[in-house]
View 1: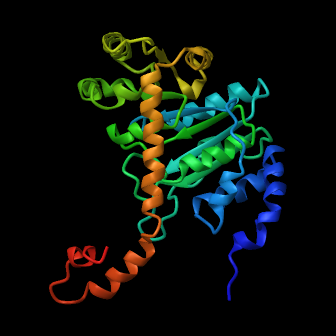
View 2 (view 1 turned 90 degrees about the horizontal axis):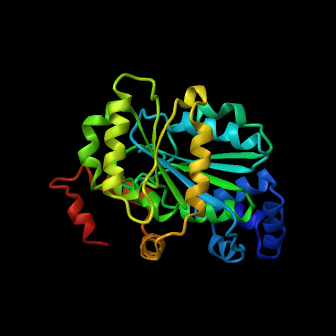
Length: 310
């Protein structure tokens, strides 16, 4: 009988050893723990239950449309924070392959300068069909990384547009990255990214019409202002311009007193996702694929016939 890799490596009596290694920022132990949580290995829930809550680690969400330069911006943030001896974990949510359900892009090439940096842990997770640009297991993965005592966890989401509101249920600060060419999309943001942004970053701000775009974005942010007026930070991430201002703005937001109702809504969103994941855990996508392969050649095949069995 084949024994689970988890059972070999993480039997209950070794959990405390693993957790201690995670606290000591043993990257090999962190990587193994992330894998067992992401893949829902046996007894992963017991392992998660033993992790200590760490409120000091701050989660920074980075989202926005494809081509906005999210990975380049994160690279610039890493360069800034590592010079201050900060410890950072980066979780990049990538699109999933429809064939093996793994991440398509893998660890970001633009962050290659930090692969061997002892203060930076980089991991790609597959979105695995999640419509909100997030991985279904990212909440638990962030709990593992939080237990590792990182100063910041940066979560970069799949660039799929307005459905990325899930990031707001996870991050302490959500950065929405845009480029000047997004000017025509300003109105559509009101019901999407405008609702989740804590900070707007206009990347590639040396491009034509950027001043007009920034001005219009500031006006829109002012209209939405409540206890926190969303700042608009101009950056050229590839040149590290504007990064000092951005990191200062991040700190200001982290210190800003949060709206209790908004915090409650975000926590409710977190809990909803965890409940959703728990109730769906007996639905195996690989099994669905196997069933369809068996049935697809039959006459009058319909996925709705298979749906009845669930």
